[in-house]
Length: 301
Figure 1 (cartoon, rainbow, N blue to C red):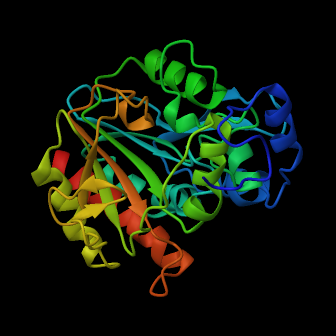
Figure 2 (cartoon, rainbow, N blue to C red):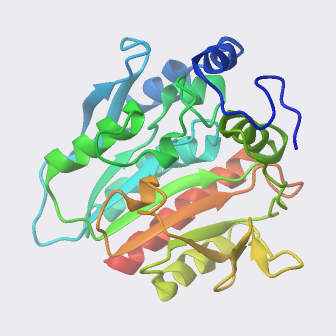
């Protein structure tokens, strides 16, 4: 049983504990400076910046943006890139921005590409997995979702009404998953969580009902040129899931209400970068995310 400073072990949190948790959160970096100001300067020709919503915690501070083609070509496959569903996973956001700045125009010749670089800006600023309601947006992609981050993104994709061939969702696995976020989850739900081995390296999470292993392998092989791939632990697993190919595990994305399960795209992957590795730098992590996106787009084109 982990000791977490909020709540009673074995008893799920009520409103009082959630309010106590929220009161402890602090702004630690600027969504405006690190995301919005960059976005305004990197949109390539043929694309536009669309505000698709705003978070109700502070609609002025947390507008939500997507980068969209000015017109969709029905003869091209369409792809969705999402970052920052977990706001604390920095390279998901910064990697998406780097892709927009450096590679988006190149790949737009063959694909219609929608990029949503920061789904959870409050989480980005407070370096959090959850939103202020103590909800994990990446377990909230279902109808009438109580998480505005998930609900507003789903509305955007519904309104675009385009058949998606690809969805790549950019994430990180960090040491704080064991030191903070899993203990918080156990406390919130009144359960216990064993620590899991944090994998040292990059891996992808495929979709259990449709893993598309050749596609996952193409992403892994491209990222190998940039950074190291996570080895399995002594049980042949990564974060408790069986390794089905080098650096590839599977989750049932729709059943878990993950962002990666929100579409019916044929090719779906979640990237996982390890920023706390002795062999990683912030730039290296961003480069790995960009390499993964480019490999995924090469595969579908």
